[in-house]
Image 1 (cartoon, rainbow, N blue to C red):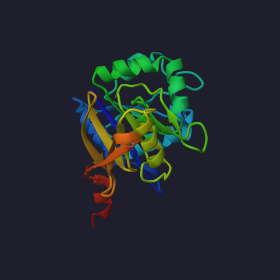
Image 2 (image 1 turned 90 degrees about the vertical axis):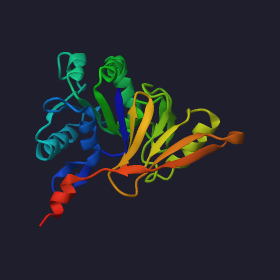
Image 3 (image 1 turned 45 degrees about the vertical axis):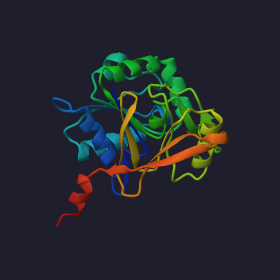
Length: 249
């Protein structure tokens, strides 16, 4: 039962649009498949944007040709006959960013709240970025409802913690998250800078990992007298084989 909740995954690439980053490589390695890794992409939080799927397929085909890639789209109807069977057949389920509020509503309409728990308990590695990080937790901070960040409190709750991504790149995230934890709107939880991820086994944090040297994770919990206490969690830097290949003579 493993989850990799991140503020990263695919990395931007000026030539190709996207490339597979170390965090996504790490999710595949955590699955430790016996044969070719099977990975399913979900872009529900972007309304199943076809361009996002195309970028994902292209990046994985180029950078990880060993991976058998599929996707689960729910708009305008599911693209597979049996959602449960398809997800249970995977080694990794990777969820993209976008609107976590819309993702949760659509998933619940199709029973994915129940299916994802079964998939997780079956040993499939669940992972994702931004909305694909927050969704596994009880709640966090989101811009799903408009440009001003607000709390979301109806996550799947596989992880009984709160979560917020983009802790270092969106200035409003840190003070709002701390206030929500301090006042009890959200339980204690974890935040990630861009490029950082949280590896959970069961519901316990194993380690923080990162695809860049200056990315960290953060533990935020209630403090005395209505305050929040923030503690930096150092992240282990993951290797990036594609950068090394790019720099080779």
